[in-house]
Length: 117
Length: 146
Image (cartoon, rainbow over all chains, first blue to last red; front, side, top):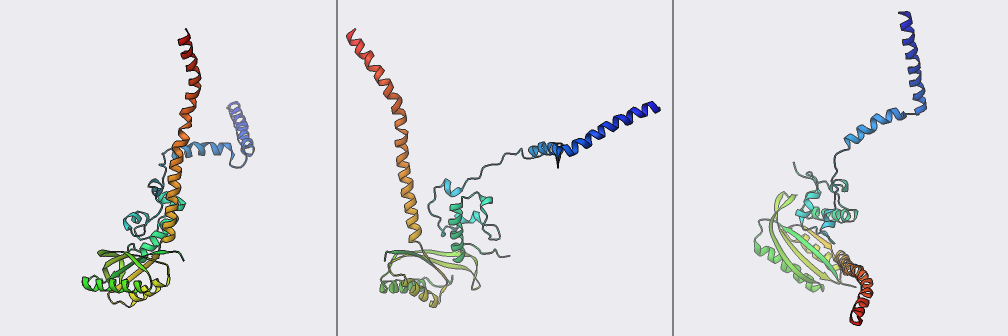
């Protein structure tokens, strides 16, 4: 029994020592920590993101009319906030024109500043 | 001074009779004429629901007009008229000529680019045709000689 225990302890000894040595050797985080994290992330990221395209670029719009509230309506939230580019995919140039158009439309009561309750 | 273009929109109370709205438009037209401005078009959008309450009203009668002028002070006078007009509850004037100029410029730019594109495409098929041409004539020449 004693003989059996001894090798077990010995076997534990080197293995644990190896773990310890690999810990500092791998550095902070270590490759061991990174490896299980990596595949998991890749697995989560597996869905296909549809590329957002600026709707005004598709239409080749040179001018955004503030009088057409139905065109501007999809770019505001329900409560009246202007949606950011990262939500709508509008290009920077058209977003600039769009904000001006929305603000003008708000001033003449075609679009709400803030939706009424 | 170059000519400027303005959009003028005003909203009347929904219960005003058509005649009163015409009267407001007429006064605007006369003041514009006095100051040397031209009203290009008048469009009555009619009764519409407003996006928010104005003077405790939910609906309004929208009128839209386009004004062209070389004197910017006309706008001041027109807005003063709208402010004192009883049926008018809201108005907005927007200067648009600079944006329209930009729009035209972009449009021209696009057309020019579209015109250039086929010219670029044309040389590509032409180049393979030219090496083929020298080969063809010798065979033709050889054929008659033979």
